Amino acid sequence: MIIVRAVKQGRDAIAHGAWAGAFRVLAKADRQRPLGPQDLEHLAIAAYMLGRSDDHFEYLKRAQRAYQNARDLPRAARCAFWAGINLATRGRASHAAGWFGRAQRFADRGPRDNVEHGYLLVPALLERAAERDWKGVAEVATKAERIAERHGDADLFALAAHERAHALVQLGRVEEGLRLLDEVMVSVTVCELSPVVTGLVYCSVIAYCQDLFQVSRARAWTQALTGWCEQQPEMVAHVGQCLVHRSEIMQMHGQWGAALQEARRVKTRFAQSMNSSAAGHALYRQGEVYRLQGRFDQAESAYRKAARSGYEPQPGLALLRLAQGKITAAVSTIRRALAETTDSARRARLLPACVEIFVANGNLEQAREACGELEDSAKGRKSSLLDALAAESHGALDLAQGNPHAALERLRHAFEEWRQLEAPYEAARVRVLIAQACRKLEDEDAAALELDTARSAFSHLRAGPDVARVDRLARRAASGAEHGLTRRELEVLRHVAAGRPNKAIARDLALSNRTVDRHLSNIFNKLGVSSRSAATAFAYRNRLV
Image 1 (spheres, rainbow, N blue to C red):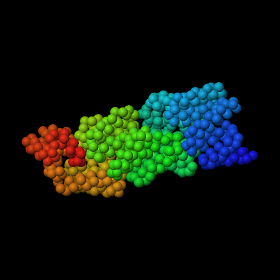
Image 2 (image 1 turned 120 degrees about the vertical axis):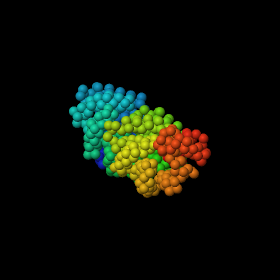
Image 3 (image 1 turned 60 degrees about the horizontal axis):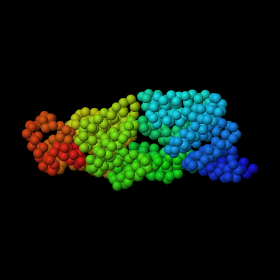
Image 4 (image 1 turned 135 degrees about the horizontal axis):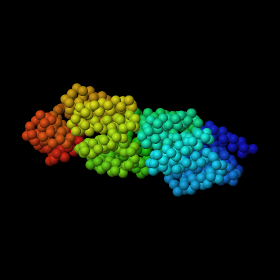
């Protein structure tokens, strides 16, 4: 009788999301008398939600065996399937394949038309996704969805449909894929799915939205995930991932202190959860905030710890080198990262940094190539974030090439996109570029207004390096000279940095060739350099362009 009451108590705790209590009561009851297969499944679910991956696997294994002994082969197949998923998420692919094979055998020996056959399409679906066979993903997912609909299984439908949605986007059917993602998330938010599948789909869909640069969707689903996690304070699984997503969104909105706090909280969560490698993402987020604040030593430490956790610390580390004035190191780092990256979404995250670093080093042809690839990535994606990044990068390149009119058109578009995305830091960065374009067009009043507004935003964010840069630009305007250069010499230097030959500079500035030669000689003497490339590097290193 005592055991019966304990089991009922455990089941009630499961129903209310009281995972620690459910695990404690059911585990104790199991020690007194082995539980039946259904309650072993309940115990496995509680273990999963508490991040106890080994216990989750062991209870699934026992439940599978108990169902097999009871000749309930479909349920035995389901348990074996989830045991395989457990192993696959921990990188144990061969062991996982064995359990999927066992699940297939049980399903084949059961009734011909059972929903477990649909679940056993999921491993093949994930394998095709890993191979980037998006057409294959869509085909397999469609089969699984049909089985799910025939059996009224919401879990299976959600698992298959959100993978098909991602595949549709990758195949260029962006609107169709995003609509399907939204449909899947309806079933999540109205609590139609089991706790395990709810968490998996939440995190997977948010990750997809970030890969697809769908900021508004990622923000909305992260808020919903946060609410779901808060309803289950004992839960460990998925909470860490939720904190990482929240940190990223807070950083974009200029809430840097809160973003740091959320990222730091991940450490304790991921220490217990099944997805401990994701702690590297949280460390990277910390490094990003530290870099923007000018806390370079702390940023370096965070990026290195992220790398040791298996997370690629780029483009943050390359941008840190640029901020430190180590341009050669920044170029080498970002080139290496780009050469090793084939995934289009990951390349798109690197490309804006490539443009910024190549422009700073005077590699305008390579900056142009990176710009073109970024613009191609933005086409058809319906992503305000990608549009903003592409417009800002191309505007910066136009500016470096001595084309302020074209730069202004693109930069004002980028500013409006960042404003709509409520991204104050990025909007302020674009204002600085707009100011530089206005200055090249000799509109000093407009330039001063843009710089003043940008400085106010940077100061509010405590973005020390950017405040210092704006102050340098403002001082240069007030003094009319920098590093001993006259205003005209600065103009010549900026044209040299843009890769313009002397004859073109003479034509653009209405000077004689001899005058340009004299200005260039004076520039070399004042800067202590002996070549155009050295003068260009000096100009970018000291923010003269």
